[in-house]
Structures are given as structure tokens and as C-alpha cells.
Image (cartoon, rainbow, N blue to C red; front, side):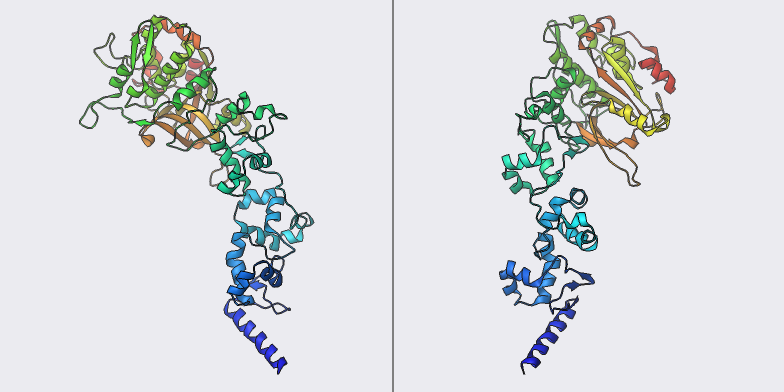
Length: 490
């Protein structure tokens, strides 16, 4: 009778298992579910001891419990066997963490299919309690000099509660949030650069990239800005997004043009200028970059190096009725910066205030490394003229921006195509704001670095009616060659 009951029980188990899509192992407890044998990561007896409440809930039905383990337990990281810990396997294999992130089920399946066949992988199936080789690179920037995953979570345990035990998520939290709060992520006694007040910490903070439409944090430059780029980035961080993007004339929808906004925003007060960026709206790309540059110059010029005559000549004469006629492309300082082609670069060269660098199309370099080196010169706060097509001049499609950084990326074919981040005025952000584009959308570019702000005093010799004939020609029928443009900016 007992033998009959045992046989009946086994048959009942078999029927239930088949109905659930399971097969039955030799010991009578199923480990195969929908064609996959989970015996390497699951043992029925161990599992019900670990989770007696679940066993009771499912009335000790081994087929249903296996089904629960596969469909729910693995996603939650539940341990199914004394021989395998998904936490240990995840901690011990950094390459799998990069690949799978927090998709825990994939770690179980990887071990079943591949890891169990590798001695190196098998060594990590249990017993690894400390995360190995935690991630330090975020969006192409390596924070290893100032960041340690283990130190950070020990100092701020609440971070794990907030984002989870995931080295990628913890690093992103540090970069996006922790650095704004000046959180320390490495022992500053051993690593002085990890101190939030250090120049290196602040430099890495300024490499943080922010999504399209966002603003730079108020403390993007965390100490008193000293360099030109630091002052410019501080100005951008204090500039409100939006304000409208507009290139047309007055109408019912737009009671004020960008030219009128410029004349209201830039005034002469005493011996120098006054620039109110809140009045410089609506805007377009070259007006946004020029006015940020003027505000930066004001903030830099604490000692009155720039004479009044230079401030007068730097003023945008953008509408009729001012002291000078509205400046066409190439006319005066504003007309140079507002021109087609590399207008701002030409102005900076003429003032002797900085250096310009040409970034060509990929085909203009003999190696991919040469193209990468050209882009590596760019630093947050540099000016960048983007050319979206081959044309320079009348037919060009361009954009004037402040470069903020780049993120390593691949296109759909696996070819490198970094994302370029920048600040400017554009339709997509409704005026001022941050946006980005794949590098493949940039045909060529001109990078401008302001290295000698004092040289803006030379604007005293560029009268509001002085004309650069080459820049003026670019709006009146002339399309420049690459060679001609390079000669003009070097």
C-alpha cells in the first residue's frame, strides 16, 4: 500500500511538472524548466529551507516552486543552491557586470551555459563578498583619481539604499549628484586630488555631461573661477534656459527681434560695458555665444584692463538708430562674430586673444587616430563653430556653440561616433540651453581657445564700421575652400 502511495505521489508530481512545462530529475524533484536544466544553480531542498514561507505558500509543490524560482526568484537574486550565489558571481566578474548590469537572471543563465565550464568563473560562484574591479569610467571620463566604489559606499551607505548595489549606478550617482554636493569618494590623505576643493576634482566635475535641455549646476565651477574657460562656464551656469530662438523680424508672435534684444542687453556704463543676459532674448546661436563671451570678459576684467573705446567697439550694433548703423556680416566686432564661416575665430585671431584649431572631416586624416587627436584638443568652455555640410559661406549650414564635452559612443554598425555636448541657442531648446549631437553630424569644425583675455583691449582699433571683406563675402555669394579658411584663422 505504501509503495502504491509513493508511486501515486510521484505520478502526481510528474503530471504537475508536465503541466508546468517542467521535466523531472532522477531524485524526483524537477530542475529542468522549459528546456533548461537549473541544477547548477537550484536545489529544491536548499531552496525551501532558505524560504520556508514560499514552500508553505506553494504547498511544497516542487514543480511550482521551481517555476517560481525561474520566473521570479532569479530576477530578485534569490539563492537557489549552496553551490551558487548570484551576488558572488556578479561581484567576481566585472566583465559580466558591464554586460548585464542588474539583470540578475542573465548571471544565472551565463553560469549554467558557460561559467560552470570555466575554472576561473567557477571560482567566483560563491564566496566573493567584495565587488571586484568596480567601474570608474562614466561617459568616457575616468574618475579613478578621485573615486573609489568601496570607500564611497562605506562613507555614504544611504547611496546603496537609494540606487542599489550596482557599481554603475553608484558611480553615476557620484558624478551626477555627489560631485555637486562636494561628496568625498576616496581617502584624501592618500589621494589629495579626491578633496572636493582640489583643482583636479573640480576639473573632473566640469567634464560631467548633462542631458539635452538641462542647465549646468550653479556650482559647476566650484571655486572662484580663474581661467577664461572657468569664468565662461560659470556665466553659462548662471544663465537661465530658454528665452526663445528667433532670427526674423518683428511680428505679432515676436514683438522684439534678437537685434533689439542685443542692443538692450549690452549698454555702456561709465568706463566699461554692462551686459544683462536676461535681456538678451530672443537669441540665436552666434548672439548667444557672443553675449556670453562679453559677459565673461566683464567678469574677468576686474582691474579695468579693457578700455572704454574697446567696450564701445565690442558692442553689438544690431539695429538701426544706434550710434552706428546695424552691422552686416564682417562689419565691426559683432559683425565678424556673427558672420558665416569661422566668424568668431577670425575676430579672436585679429584681437590676438587666442588660438584656433581646424577639425577636418574624417577623410582628411590618414588615420582614425589623427581624427581623434584633433577632437582631443577641445576642452569645456572652448568656442566651436560647427559646419554640418561641406560648404563654408553662402551655402553653409552651421552652428556656433560653447563646447562642453563628449561621450564615447558607437553607431548602429559598431563604428565609433562620439556624442558632442554643447551650449548655445537653438530651436530644440527654445533658446539658451544644452544639447548634443553625434559627431558624424559634424562635417568639420573650428575650435577657438581664448588664451589672452587682455588682448580684447585691441578691439579699440576695430571700429564699428571696419569691415573684414572676406567674412562679408561669405554672405554675398562666396563659398570658401578649406585651404582658404584655414589660412584665415591661423
